[in-house]
Length: 227
Ligand SMILES: Nc1ncnc2c1ncn2[C@@H]1O[C@H](COP(=O)(O)OP(=O)(O)OP(=O)(O)O)[C@@H](O)[C@H]1O
Image: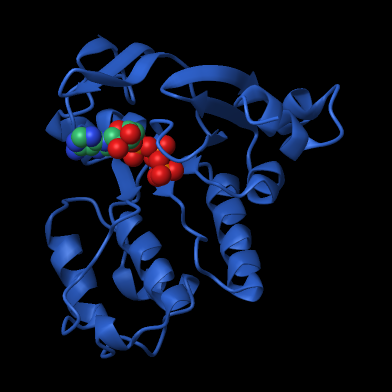
């Protein structure tokens, strides 16, 4: 991806951002609120049209059906009707794809076995989050986008989710992870892009970014102009 630019009503919210993500990499995107992280992901998954830039995802155009069928997406504002049962959600999402993982296995893997008949509205925050990740994986995606997956989770659920993201990486999936949690990024990501006010201000391994600073957090504050 090179030169990604997106404007909303004349305001540039993503400004010439470019990076390459390698196969099998866990790639983090961090930055303050409003930095353009979600907009960047939305352009990469074909949900929004870029105003400028060259975007290639798995060798194709982000919005093409061939690419869409090979990616998985868990978006920040994901929601399901409160009355929908877990099994119904899995069946519905599975129906949208030709290639799909047996969804009962996915529920097992994500700690939701036995919750098939539970309604979305009755699930805890952690269970909802895991359900959204399971839904994002239903088409056995080669590339998975996860946006703030541990926000609102208690420490134990957060740790568990980290383990599951690691497992995705180990299985060979490429993961793009948007996060506000620098400890999470340091623990999970091979490389990290730092966005601030729509621009890419740094790109490297967590260790590279932290080099010359007390830690990753102080590097982040300096890079994003908050230090
Ligand atoms: N549909 C939209 N219409 C107008 N402005 C938008 C729209 N979506 C996002 N924006 C604006 O674009 C900017 C970037 O938003 P974006 O959600 O990409 O940032 P972010 O880095 O993901 O922030 P956060 O950390 O708060 O999720 C913000 O100023 C936001 O208000």
